[in-house]
Image (cartoon, rainbow, N blue to C red; front, side, top):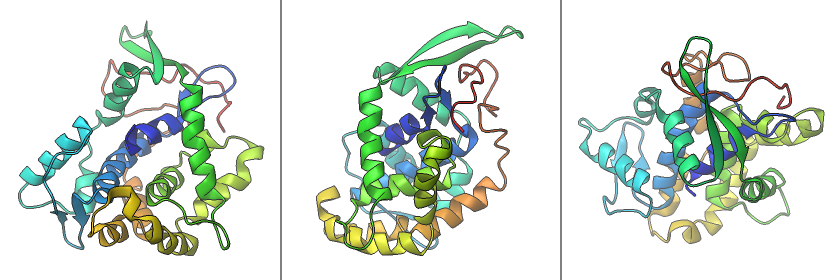
Length: 261
C-alpha cells in the first residue's frame, strides 16, 4: 500500500458499532501531502522553497503516484507545495475509498439516504493490515533518545496523522490520550530531532543519492504542520464524524456511534 492508502486506513476509526472516517476534509489534503511525501522519499521530486521540482520523471510502481508525477510535470508554471495542496480536489477521499474497496482492504455497502442519494457506508476494514500499519506508527510515537531511528516513511505518516487530526481515530478515548500527545509532539522540536535520526536510515527508503535533501524538504514536522495548518484554517471540517464537503451522491461513515473520540 502507498502512504496515502495507509493514512486512509488509519483514518477509519473502528468504533464500537460502525467504522467511521475521521476528519475527511482534513484527510483529503493530508492524502495529497502523502503523495508528495512518498514521491520525495523515492527521489522523484523535491519540495523547494518556491515550487515542486521534478528530479526524476521515471515511473514508480504505483499507478496513482505515476499519475501524480505526470500531472506535476505537466503543470506550468511548476506549483508550490502550498498551492498544490490548496487545490486538492474534493474527490480525493472518494477515490481512495474506492481504491481500498477494490483492494478488499475495506468493505462497503450502498444505501439510499432520505434525499434519495446513494451513499457508501464503511462496513468493515482489514483489521490485520490496519494493525500492521498501527504497529509502525506506534514505533514512531515511542521514538526518542536511546531508541532506534524512525524510518523516514513512517515518520512522514506519523506527522500527517497528527496534524490532520486523525489521531483520535487511531488512538481513541482516554486510553489513547498519551499516544495522541506523542504524535502531536512530532510537529514540534521533537519532530526535528527525529528527522535527524531518520536521515541515517533514509537510503533504504529509496536508494537515491539525493534522498536526504528530498526528505529534508518534506519531513520537518514544523514545516509540514505549518503548511497544512494554514490550509486547514480555510477548510470547514464539520464535527469529528463525517460532515463532509463532498459532492451529493457521495458516501457515508455508517452513522454516528461516538466510539472514535
